[in-house]
Image (cartoon, rainbow, N blue to C red; front, side, top):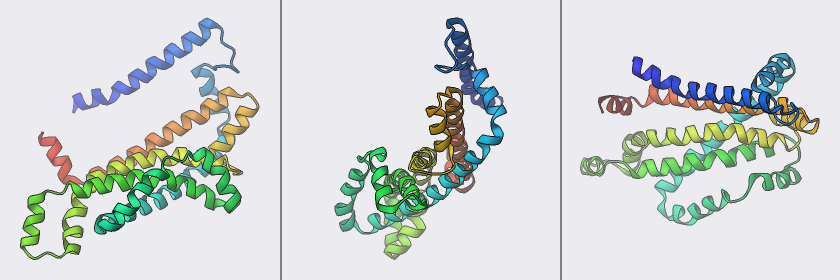
Length: 255
């Protein structure tokens, strides 16, 4: 237990060292605050401006969670359909890969033209960045099912549906959660990008206003908030994985 706790604190020690070097370097070199503020100044601004920043934070969290739920649901459903229907998979899978080669920052203005400034284009942006990792991870998980178990169930007379729901889907859960963890971190950045489309609130709006007024300290406040939200979403998915996928945790502990 003590060793695991020590390993868990190593990243925090590295971050603390980074902030110390940052603080000393900025103070020593005399860098102007509008160019690169010191970490202490950024923390002070975050504390002093919390009342004005918190509504933007709440707005981004709600948007990211909604987009993540929609994107993950579509991604998992797409993976199931492509796995059960190989013919459709051969036709659709290359198009899924091509969809990820379109820069979101280029697609965003088109979504505004097509769907206006409402909630729909924002959700489309988050869905596009969330569904693909889950789809790919789930498809890989379905393929990793133990062949001997599949053979045993087929010999026992299991139907294709029973084979999927009772064996392939549970066996793919570790891979699915890997995709969920990636998509959870992407959802925050997708929400921030979508807020650039013309939202009234959100970290993206806060960052844009701060950048246009040369408030670099507030820009860094927004950046750190995005990082913390991504880590929080990642931790929630990891906790859910430990609760639901118990057999992999037991196997890893034995190893």
